[in-house]
Length: 525
Image 1: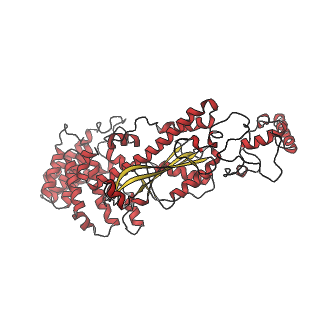
Image 2: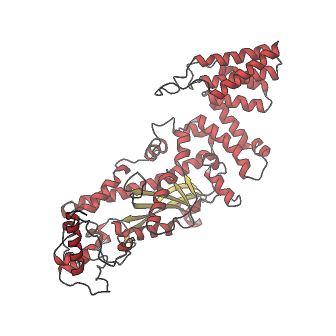
Image 3: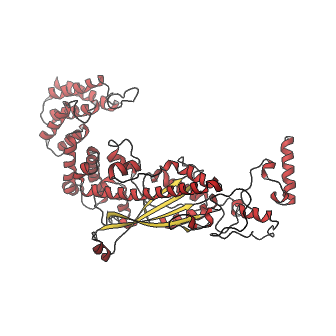
């Protein structure tokens, strides 16, 4: 053991035997160890954050500095929340210790919700249907899973809770802390209110938003308890919440010795990507709200500034307290806008599900992705609903899916291929053959890019049709040879930034074509 380390340990033992370090005029910095943040006996020494009512660092320092050390076995007198102390604590003041002393410092209806935790509730006007269309699950598949868990009962939107967190980082590790949470729920109008206001009784008219704000790390336990009470028996709706928000909440609950909630969740990020990935530069929530829903987010702070603003709030001295407080309030307003936008986005999905044929023009959604999602939803519905698959496919939903696919087939080659295969499966061979020949001669000037793989699949389907339906071996062999010849033309347009370009035919497709060619050659002899 080195001399320096032995000297440090000796100083630590001497200080510990004589009493607290600060009482002897020493600091942890002089011993080479990190300075303690809490007084002896607080929950943080046992690996837990201090609860509401526990003594803080500033209070312990004030008691020692004034010569009134607490008696052994008794907790030091704590500062009453909501009142400023008569004597100023040692060291610079920060908003987390000074401004929090009165919740009225924060504009709006902020109230104390625990140790270093504030809460406020506000109500915003909103429009969303009381009864959701059954086809909403075609766009948000998670709704089907909820129905299967609830014995097939229709999903009740009153159980929905829109949820969003602001955190100290985007890494999602154990060091990332959530300091701001917002939860929003629909409020159904009363019958008299709906008539007097002129609104339809079949719509939600108000959105109640509840926020929890953490003012310093020691209050995290109360902060999480408030959130968990609000989330109880709810279905969460979030934007990338499955990957980020819910994981952060789970991690912080485990770090604080709490049981994380196991709640069903609707993540609207993935349905948004399906409908607008090829329409917008990116599918961030703010961009979808402004470009698709037409919401005004001018003057809003970006969420990426939230960690820096909260850290500045914790470190600020008297001179910088006011601007740091205002910046934190702006982040709280940004959090409210996120919840309102999330509820508006959910209402937009409900409107698309109710009138899908109008959606490409009304909401600028991708016509091909909408058609493919609708087709998959019709087929998926047979797994969760009581009617037989044939009944579902033959009903109105199946007809809508076919009509959407026909419209998309005019512009997109994959939709044209999918429609041709569906027609062939329905024994409409002539219509299917016409669509496949259209793909074979797909012009370059059309909107959708026909890749070699899609064209090869169309030629393969033409070969099967010629052999099985027309009983012609020579045309079938010609189609297969034409498909194999596409391997000499790499698909550079599909991935402009890819290096090297992907092969035009996959190994499985190439092997299938070669096997068919060999069989047709033997059959022709």
